[in-house]
Amino acid sequence: KAGVTQTPRYLIKTRGQQVTLSCSPISGHRSVSWYQQTPGQGLQFLFEYFSETQRNKGNFPGRFSGRQFSNSRSEMNVSTLELGDSALYLCASSLAGLGNTIYFGEGSWLTVV
Amino acid sequence: QQQVKQSPQSLIVQKGGISIINCAYENTAFDYFPWYQQFPGKGPALLIAIRPDVSEKKEGRFTISFNKSAKQFSLHIMDSQPGDSATYFCAALYSGGGADGLTFGKGTHLIIQP
Image: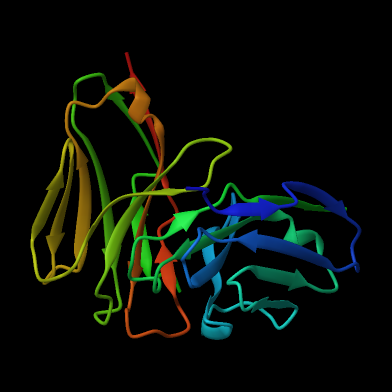
């Protein structure tokens, strides 16, 4: 059974640009959640989607957005990139939600220069 | 406001010893407390989780102890092995949903010396 797949794995963007990250959950999983990991702030919850609806949202500015498609695949977008957005962005999936076992992908490393 | 405080930040334990990592939370609505293990270059992986209706849960060499009145929970790794060297995160969740989603501790970098 394939795990959570995130693309791209590594990317470099310039301040002010936007970026879109993609996540393919484990087959059959309907919940997809996104996290930002940095050395200073650690792991922080961004948002969760279930059946194409955003169900939970963390305390991040509106520049961070996401969506989920009917096949449960998800994308997150960060607009007007700032240097502080440099981080590892992790996607996780689960059968029904955050209170179930969630499985993380290996993440997308974003560097903003 | 840091809702889940984890300590220590780093920990060195001899092979065969007991590794203990502690977490304290503030929100009494939290009702799910997982621990994650993360190796360099990998995403976190669920290690063990507990709900507040039990005080202890054991899976192999890993045990969670939970103290609801003190709002604290801890991870014990018995017979620690070099392969356990990783970063460990505690987390807390209110299953009813809300802005916090999964709230993580800052992590503990564990090194098991052979």
